Length: 442
Image (cartoon, rainbow, N blue to C red; front, side, top):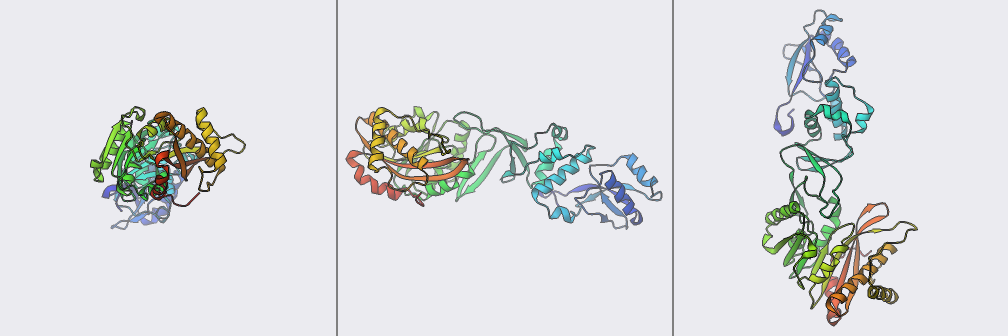
């Protein structure tokens, strides 16, 4: 058996004659010194090696073994190279193996294993190549500090990794930077391949959202050839890259105010060979100096991207308009009034007119709360466009796409909103519907 990284594994064992093997086993079990992860091994000279916990056995235990029932035994210590795992350890899950390994570590250092320590072990983790990311609700007990730094090597080995990190809560603020501590390893850079796209990032500085895979696949299916797109919350390129690589957008302006995420985004553009079709705008997107340039704007920020709506309206092409993809966490608590976007008096009038005419929601929407929210957003965007350009625009709900359940009675959804000046609203609708890769109607 080889350890992680192809290195040979060495353990310590008590070596005795065959006739004293059972006596030694009982003694080691009684004193919680027997290593149950590995099998007892017969050596070439006929003696038996019983694996023990820890790196050595005290002289007191060796003398006790000789004096209590095995006076003629040699009972010496030896190192065993590449020991054979026991059947029990071979058949256990990673979580069970972790529990076994840590119990051996704790008891091997003379401490007592407890139900509290077992409850404090991680039940799930994220794997990023050879780096394992533990959840924040594990290893909180003060006792673990006594076992560092060897503790983290044991955890990584038991779970089949070489590097280890532990997450905390996402930092408040617009960057949504993760609070992650690197426990084992020289750096936190990892790489993922998702739908043929390579993403690299530092887990201690940036997030990777596995829950958005359905929306990334939907974006990849859109028809964006020849279009200029503005991604207001680009991150490491979750949506920027699918728009460029699979949806064939001609050019993307990617906005990101976290320098760590922007650095990862640049690496990802280079890794995927599309760096020449993207411009990164580092800083607050509310200060973006673009105007009337975008055929499409992506607003991929939750719980709300409302602060970016005025910027989205400014960058939409003034002559033909375009499509907004607006992410939001919509609440649907029973008996609770839905919190709708703030709206001007003009927007409120437009919203009421839209409800009366029914023209805003051509597709059936799964939840009433989603429909009310989408109609309110359409009205608010319409009011912003009117204020910005001094003439009315038509805002039409193309689709509301569920992404994931964010929490009980809270859904992450995306609104595809078609926005056109009235002079060209008719001709833009058909193209918009064809380009949105809507998937199943909801």
